[in-house]
Image (cartoon, rainbow, N blue to C red; front, side, top):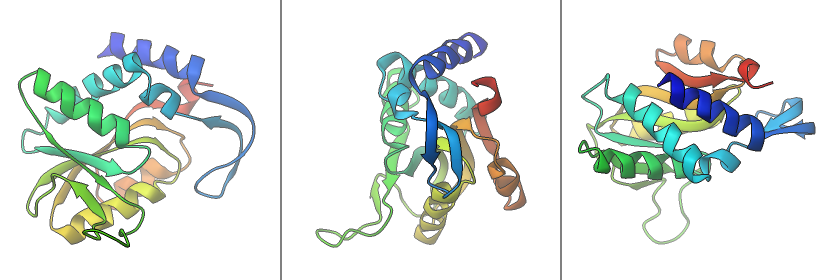
Length: 180
């Protein structure tokens, strides 16, 4: 994983670290922004992320499904389930909307999640973990169990502590201090 992690670190540094004045999803102000989608939508970037996440997911063989909050998790879920199939240990995938659809099936969770499933939740970047906690709430109300939370970058703004306090195992590929 170390070689994959170092390659990913370079891609993130070159593509995803933006300097300026930004307001984060948490409402906090920052002089940098991590536009991780520039890496998760890069073919090598998403492949490396998927490989690292699959290595971590394999440590919990009860996990058969991977998903997360829509937008940040979308390319990661797609890459991870595609690679899991290619490597002979297929995982199903799902996405959690910010709110229920007002049309069609009206679902908040789209994809292949069933009550009783044990899942890994993935996300590109966490600050305080707000969008991930909303997704976890929807997943647990649906009747599935979150076994692990995996993120590409932890902004080191208290999210890790909150996950631990709430009893969730958090795995991050990189900390923001490694990228700045």
